[in-house]
Image (tube, rainbow, N blue to C red; front, side, top):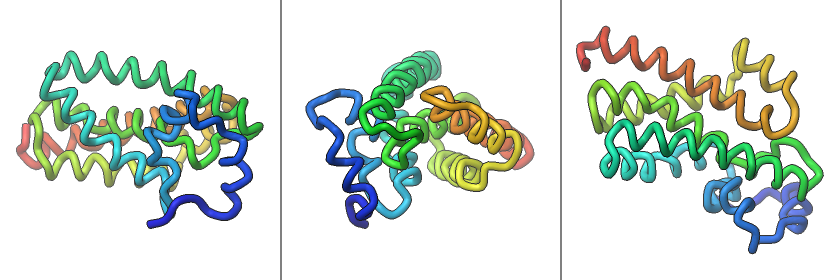
Length: 173
């Protein structure tokens, strides 16, 4: 693992690291990790999600997810504005939101189950990386912060639907 690729250096220089949107958009720096910043961001999203679930149950977790999505739109918009780009790979708060969505069935139906949480990560990353339709359409057609966030939200929803089926088919629920 390393921090940043050479082509990311110019973008990094445009960032004011004192600004909260930088740390939120990069999910507290996970977006700076290479290779695979999206995977690092998704992995980094799991511990706070589980802590939130332990502290607030499923209702607290869903409340936190709604807040995370709202903050994600704000942080992505400011990050894109500061760097003059769109959906820079350093922005991984969208992966955090998608991962949290993918985890909902595991937490709701079963609770904290390491296998199901890991499987939610695998499913989410599969759909986020490959971007089958309709995720690819959202990714290509919607610009700005909405485009940054919505493709990952959709990937998380699809992963959550499949995970729900696995939970009931495999007898977890």
